Amino acid sequence: EVAGMREFLETHALEESFRRGDVEWEAGVVAAHHRLSRLETQMLSGNRSEPEVWKRYDWEFHRALIAACGSTALLATHARIFDQYLRYQIIAVIFRGEQAANEHRELLQLALSRDHVKAGQILKRHIHACVEHTVENGLLPK
Image (cartoon, rainbow, N blue to C red; front, side, top):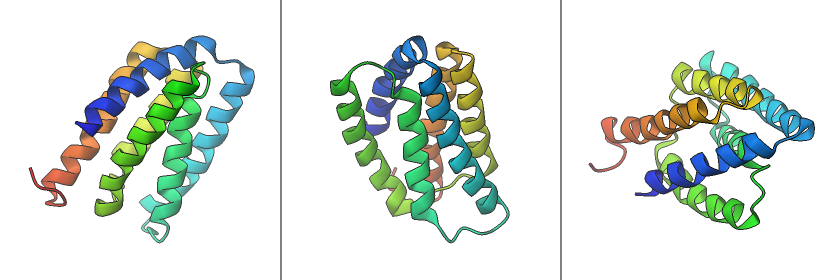
């Protein structure tokens, strides 16, 4: 249910943000992805000593993607839902590896090309794969 709400809110916010975003928005997205990507590279090499930093960078990247949506109410609601979604990650300490890193890279490229339709598809896969990973690994009940 929380994943569905996150998908609903974030997909709408992506569309609006991609439509309204300017060069400053793009710079924020690129910077947030750079931080996340550097840490994911470190994690993929076997150093997973900073899961809390990864969670923060993941949040900052997703927030940067929707930052230009034009609605403080939407951003606030998304923040609350993302926080609830993140609670599952805190329980599971999830980083799905190369798949998640690739999805983040795809989202960056789609943001820069302003393709909200494909970004929405990637985002849906990204959100639900995390939930599936959590359940499949016995970290939450089915």
